[in-house]
Image 1 (tube, one colour):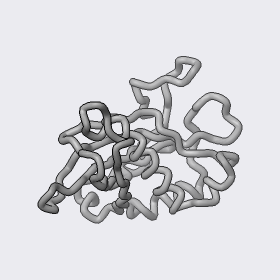
Image 2 (image 1 turned 180 degrees about the vertical axis):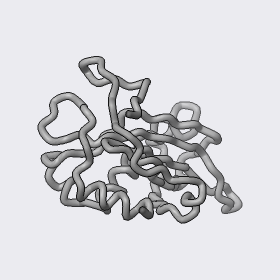
Image 3 (image 1 turned 120 degrees about the horizontal axis):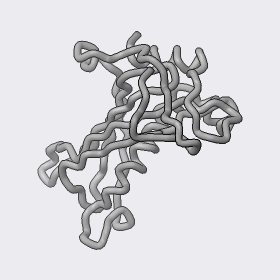
Image 4 (image 1 turned 90 degrees about the horizontal axis):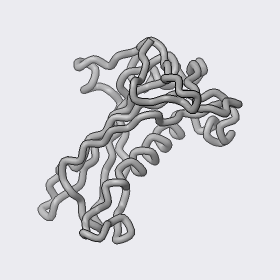
Length: 173
């Protein structure tokens, strides 16, 4: 089983998300499904220095992830977690360049490895410079689990079959 070493649930146990069920290899990345989400920025997104606050990137990633999975199975989001939910347990973001207020930020989202109880999500953040040229602002990786209904603690549960089949459709399996 893959065990995420950096994260523990409230009882202190490491998350066990199961064996890898699908590894998107390099040959599949070109054909892999990519979703793009756009976020407009303003002064409320900036810090005292005047650039876009780095904390916004994790918020945009979370919103993009939620929109992505809502588009696949909206009925799960409409039940407010009563059938389970996808929850982030780890996220890393590498910032490459700064963005400024009033720039639009695009988040490209891809699914990487799919496990029995979770999945890896990768994202790239882009904007356009004054000449209209697109440039990369940051890259991110997120590990998310399926949290079953009724669990008080955040514990990874196996994906329901209907959720897993929809994810497989997206990753091209």
